[in-house]
Image (cartoon, rainbow, N blue to C red; front, side):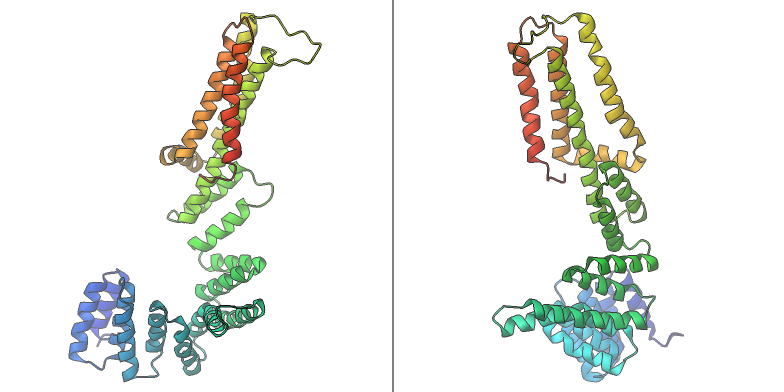
Amino acid sequence: MSGTGLHPALERADALYELRRYDEAKTLLGQRLAEDPEDVAAWVRLSRCHLGAQNEAAQALEAAERALAIDPEHIGALLQHARALQASSRIVDAEDPLREVIRLAPEYWYGYALLGHWLYRIRALRIGQANGGSVTNEAMAESFRESDELALTAVRLAPEEVFPYEVRGAIARISGDQALAAEMDQAVLRLDPQHPEALARRTQRAAAAPGVKAAEAAGLYADALAATPDSPALQQGLDHASYRLLRGVRWIALLCLGLAGTMLDLWTKEGVVPRELPVPLAQRLWYFVPIGALWTIGALLRYRRLRMGVRYNLRSLIHRRRWPRIVLGQAAWAVFCALLISQVPWSERAVPRIVFWAGLVPTLATIWFDRRKTT
């Protein structure tokens, strides 16, 4: 035996499990059980390894049941039995072993937390089976209340553990209590500042708040990603905010197109004499002053004020996704049409009008189409 009281084979199996080398851990545990078939801890660990591997829920359940046959009141075996039942699509049957854990170890927080995590689902399935699939709002509200009470007990027993707060937050989100959900995310982040899901949810709430512009939202997501760079939810949020930034470029291009049409008086009020064509060269060259200011202030300076991570993501997004490239292509097309209208010495207005509509209509139509697209 080692200094921790565990057999050396179990310690090595635990290390292999942490490295996700489940097959090697199962082989080692199999050798230990061949030596001592009554080793409950080995059976529990074998069940855990089977759950870690894919498509081995049945073997995990069998190993947990072997452990309980040796010691029906073993807390680890009861917990592993509940997990194996849930993985075997028998979550309804998982309530009894978890209730037994609470009875045998009333001061152990994890039994309360895990039962709270699953209880409202168990209740919904049982009520649905009894009522032909129908579950009333009152019944669900009661199940949420009972689940939250169990999670709250776990919080009281272990205020420095993350999982009970996660359970309360999940129940609050499903039941619609957004204030409590936000409070639980704050509690989780107090204990684990790099918790990916809680950090993503807090960032999403901040980015979606009224008045938050695309550049600010992108900065929020970039800050959060600096803490948890492997979060898919945060990366998706940053992509969305970056795409919103790119979509703003089209409005600058359309404004350039409108200025070009105004310079040629493509549309004049009744009774107003339009200016003579062709427009003088000096006036055509002067057109570059306002559009240069538009692009400098509206795009270049705005881009330079962005965080380096946001700028990098903008470039990456253009390479990774199709719609950002479409947006930039439309902006380039609208600017090209604006330059064609403003710089060619037109002697009549029929062709510039066609060019104007060619630059305006496709871009406006796509702005309407992709107004709810994320990327």
